[in-house]
Structure formats: C-alpha cells, structure tokens
Image (cartoon, each protein chain N blue to C red):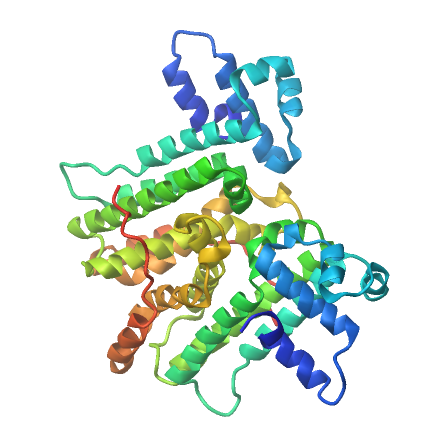
Length: 240
Length: 240
C-alpha cells in the first residue's frame, strides 16, 4: 500500500481510467515513493528524473522545483483525507464507521509519511504550503468533531458538551500526528527501517485508550476487544 | 524565564555559587539562548563565539562541534526534567503536586524549546543523542506512570488498571510533546514570534481535558476551574 500502489495511485488511476499515465502524474508518484523511502531531504529533482528515466528538463517542464512537487503531493493528500473524513448525511455513525475512520487516517499517514516526518521544515520553506496546511488542520478538527457528534448520535459514545468534544478532537489529532515521531524517536532502533504500517496502526490503540471513557456501556467490551488488536509491541526496557 | 534567566541558569549558578561563571557554562547558556531565539539550524559556532565575544578557538577548546554543544544542553534538560518528575516517597500526591508537574514540564519545554522544535533532525545527526533521548523518553513515561499512581493513591484520580494507566501516560506524553508543533503549524501566523510561554502552557488545558474522566468526583469542579485558566485562545477560523 505504498507509492505506486497507494491511495494516490488510486486517485490518479480514477482520473485517467482510459488513458496512459501522464508524465506529470508519474513524477508525483515517483517523488512520493522516493520521499517516503529515502526521506525528502535526501531526494533531489535529479534523483526523481533519473528514477523515471526522463530528462531534468522534462521534469522542470511540469514542476518549477521540488517545493512545487511537494505542494502538489500535499494537495493529493489533503484530497484523500477530506474524502476519508466525510460523514453520511442520512444516518448516525456506527462503531464500524469509527474503525474505518481510524484505519483510513493511519493509511493516509503511512502513504504520505515523509510529509509528517519533516512537517515543520517543509512548512518553513513554503508559505503557500504553510497556509494550506493550517486550513487543512482546522478542517480535519472540524470533521473529527462532526464524527464524534455522529458517534454520540449513533449511541457509540456518550454525549459530551461541545467545547469538551472539540478539545477531545484536538487531543486525538495531537496523538495521531505525533505517533510516527514517537515510534521513530522513542523506540526506533535508528532509521525508518523499523517503521511499518502495522506499527503505525498501533497508534489506534492509543486513540481508543483516550476514547474509552466516552464509549457507551453497550459498546465497551467490543471496543476493548478491538483495541487489543492494535496493542503496541513496545520494547520492555522502559524501566527507569 | 528564558536563556540566562532560565532553569539551566539556576543549575549552573547553584553549581558555581562562589565562583565566576566558567567559559564552558557561558557557551552553553549563550547557545541555548541563540538556538531558542533563532532556531538551531540558523546558528553556527561562529555566531555563538561572536555573541560571547570569545575566539572560535576558545569555543573549540571546550566543545568539539555544535552537536557536542547540543548534546551537553540536552544533558542539562534531562537533568532538569528528571528533577521535576521526582515523586515524594513519604506521602501520596495531591492536586497541587499535579499542577506543579504540569507547570514544570511546560516550563522545561519552553526553556529548551529549540530542542523539541527540530527533534527528529537533531536525533538523526547524533547517535549518542538518539540513544539518550530514547532512554529519557522511557524514563519520563515511567515517571508519569508513577505520578498517576500517586495521584490515585492520593484520591485525586480514580484507580486504573496498570496497562491502562501506562497507555494514558503515553497519550499525555504525545499531547505534551506535540503541542508546540501544533501551535506553530496549525495556527501560528508564520514564525515563532507568536509563540509564548502563556500559549505553550495552554497545552495544560489539553492534558486536563484528557485526564478529566479519571478525576475523582470530589476534585472534579476544582480541576474544571483550574483547566479554565489555561483555555487556549485559538483563532475562530476553524469553520470548514
């Protein structure tokens, strides 16, 4: 589920179902794959064009520079997450919905993992990206708040005062967006080699831990059992 | 409460109460101040020696390179946090203790803010720092777990199963260590100019939100009132 097989690929394919893939899209896909695998800082536009066996001039015909490529990848990421976080208008949300949201969000984090790995640096280097990311975050927080409200309407969660729900959404956001950095800094051996989609999705255990007190009595045991499936395999050397 | 007036200064002063400050300590203090103010990446050893009006040779007599300075600053930070997170052996913990822990942790984050701002990059560049930071994180998690247990013993929190308490400690860690990045990326105008100790401490609101369901009935209103004092002044443009 990474690079050429990931969600970006699905989007691009849907867009071009009956046409061969355009060079522009190939560049975006190759860049995403290289950024994820090697780290964005270690990949130049020359690496990207070499990887695709196209001339640097061809690449520059489509993108002004690497920042431009990163920004276009962000736009695809944003589209994907906005799509994932939609809520149905015609029915309350179910526990299945909640698990789908969580799985999807972590799938997205994985597919675009280079982005969150070096977020502050990327935002520092591109004013346009900084502005858009700010709006994206706020949109996600509103969507998460709407999801929590939908889950309360569906009886999965107990109802909460609006301001409390908003602060909770923000906590979920903080846990989700920090989980990858935690894996890397706090118990990664060294590089990203130890990062995997499975480990990343263990962040769902942390989110469910946070949500537990709000889960309705009727769903408690089911959520606890679901949560078990994501239990992190943290190292044992946590003794002081 | 920053740089020369911060906790590092207090430690250095305590160490050298009857002596003039040593050049080595001056270099550490100046570096911390410059890293915090300008960002670590924008500060060279030449900037540091110019700031102190000493020769680059004098600086290199004390430190091999900038990484070495960063590592020594980390050791001071670590010492400070370990000191803050101690628990008394002879009594259970009180609500005042809890607030002291929260205030102290955010004071520490503020005084050494450059460090968390560029953590992954710093850890990538120094194997020794990476190893020590990993141990530091695990030590903090154990300490937080001990604090939660102490607060349960003191009746402030309801008692929780050990594995749940550990997952909760980790969530608190994820929220605390991600709060500064959130301020910067999600509603900072642009640079760090908008970051302040007051804004940083609004992260306490988020931590107390997470802890609320575990607070004993007798303490609920008091904690809610304390929490109000830290309510973040987030921008209103959070509409989708």
